[in-house]
Length: 407
Image 1 (tube, rainbow, N blue to C red):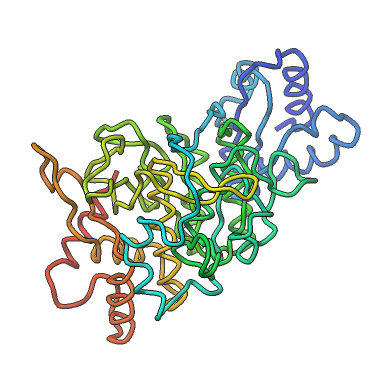
Image 2 (image 1 turned 90 degrees about the vertical axis):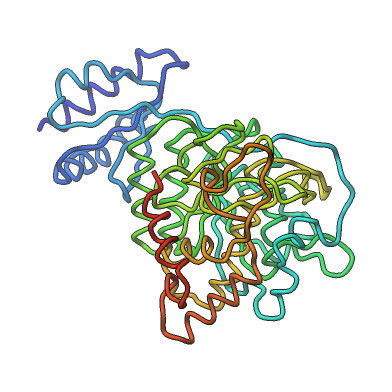
């Protein structure tokens, strides 16, 4: 393959394309071709500044190309390349009313996290939070934050200019003590990965780079409170890489109030989360279906906000942070637990949700997250030497089949 010609053609397309042109993700069918293209790109970008706009994911061996048409490339290199659009992806939340600080938010109590703290507070568990960043000055978060990364501007800290990421961080691991906000896993360590802009919008390539960063930095869990309706091969590939690296990905299902849901939650390698209201029913806005692994509190959730404030929000985003926090409590006690074992334990220990008129339990997927039961069963499984699906009840095999059937 003529790698110089490949990059020259790509550069010409980038120069000719309008700024509003669609971004693309380019992968090679042969890893040796990727290596050759990468070597040529490294040598050319010092001489051709336009190529510095291209970003690379070593984890899935992909190039992310801004504002370039794919027509000529596909015409010439159709047998060697896979090109997909770099779709936009949104955070999963609906803003509610401002709220004052709450020492113990109702969602944290609903999943019985406080009763679990005598056994685990999530100490030393590393959580990658791919979102809009975080308010590093918030008094309830300052003891739980690592430096993280800003993928939109590598020279800056991952500061939140939207609020969504700060809200997620608060539910995950706020540690305000006896006078302010408490999160589900107050001694977990959060790694903010800013991939979303001030509008709560990102490209698939930003998410791929975020997961890539989390794998390289050996986090234990990745919280992904966002989604889109489009399938993406690049996104699925990097999710699989993280899964095989032993990192659990917990993702929100979306707020369309429909059966089915968004990606990446629909990938079988993730743990898919739906939202509950205060009455332990599926929230009206929450997506639902057999692919949902577990539901968490998601309606009217108070948490941290920008400028050291507090606010209530609703969405499957909020539900996901409760489930991620519960998972962190267990991983602090069982650090070797695989993503698959964690998923099975979350499903096995969930409580039945309350049904609305006309709903059938089998059509909803998993039940309501229960942090205390998760720890009890998880610890018992370790002591008995069994896996997540063991334990003497018929629930193990049934859960395994349900998890395997997730599409």
